Amino acid sequence: MFRQLECFIQICREGSFTKAAEVLLISQPTLSQQIRFLETEVGSPLFERFGRGVKITADGEILYEKALSVMRLIEESKKETYELKHTRVQKLAIGISPSDFFYLIPRFMKFHEQYPDIALNFVPAENISQQLLSSSIDIGITDKYVAGKEIHMMHLYKEEQALVVYADHPWADRTIVSLQELEDLECFLFVGDSSLSKQLQIFSANKFRHSKFESTSPEIILSMVMQKMGAAILPISLVERFSGQQLKWIRLVGPVPLRELKIIMKKHPDNHFTAQKCIDYLLASGGGD
Image 1: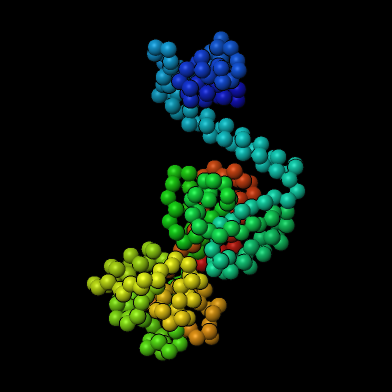
Image 2: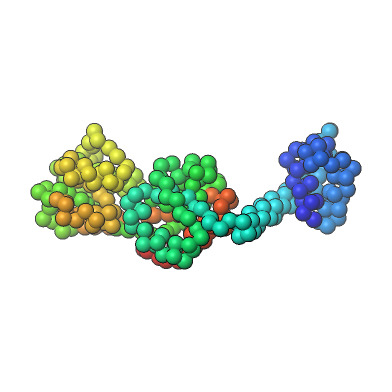
């Protein structure tokens, strides 16, 4: 049956029995016989002949999608079996920002304790989708929305974000600020979260003051606040690491701005078996709403 599906898929790709037979290195009569056996199993014709080529039938279209899934599962099983038999230390590349790595490092340490045969390689998260599709990483962890037919996203956790100001800022004594009040902020406001920036424009009738200095890196933004270049909205988990360093964070309300961290992976990853172990562990270990 597997050989018949392989022949069927190749004909669908080539649009011709002759070309498919050449690719498969078999004779055309042998190929035709394989398809006849498959059509008998399915109970309906899979191709219609026209000119020198063939056109797949409606029943054939259904079988084609299923056949691709079956062949993909077979390939994944072969890879996983090979990993178990031949690879003592499995490697997993994870794209992640330094600030998110710091927050998740206890979970990575516990994962390593449970799976000592898996070596984790942490790579700076730059362009997650491109890094995944080029196989330079196996998993991405980010707060960005990553679109693509070959990309799958899973919710990991949400964390609260707060307003960060330098110690002698006029608002440094405040404990709570509403999002609407931010338009009265008399300094530049740095926001690394692009979705939050859009949300702030909805709440504010006026545009916020824009600095000629910009960055999407939380660490760089925090450094700019330390240099009194403005205020910022950043994850509390990051800000708490620098508490006491001439900084003050203020809780935001109306509503509380949340940052969602997601696990990103290819729908059909190259390193499926190892990647799934890590993903399952991270999701099961919790860490937010």
